[in-house]
Structure formats: C-alpha cells, structure tokens
Image (cartoon, rainbow, N blue to C red; front, top):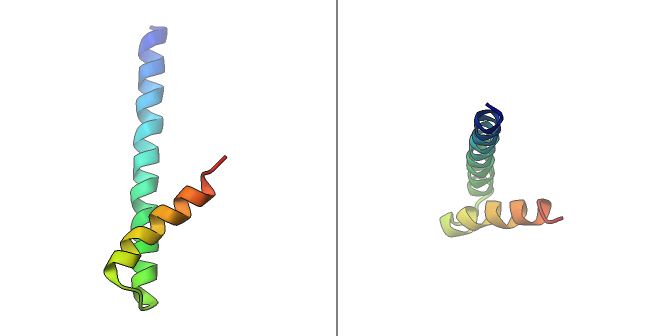
Amino acid sequence: MDRWIRYTMTASVVLLDVIAAVVSYKHMYQLVLRHGESAWSAALTPLSVDGILNDD
C-alpha cells in the first residue's frame, strides 16, 4: 500500500510539473514574439530564463 501511495504521489507531482512547464514556456514564447524577437529567439528565451530561475 505504501508503495502505491508513493508512486501515485510521484506521478501527480510530475504531471503537475509538466503542465506548469508547458504553460510557462508557451507564455514566455508568446511574450517574446509580441516584443518583436525572432521565432528562434522566442523559442530559446524561455529555456534560458527557466534555467536561471531554477538554478539552486
């Protein structure tokens, strides 16, 4: 039973993390495009910003 709870909790946290990452990436991508940057720059900017913010 404990193993099932642990797996369920881990899967839930991973799913929420993926959803948050996708939403965050999409938001930053669109924001960069609206400010006149190129598509490749807009694609890379969210990765660099999230990488800086999550660095412990």
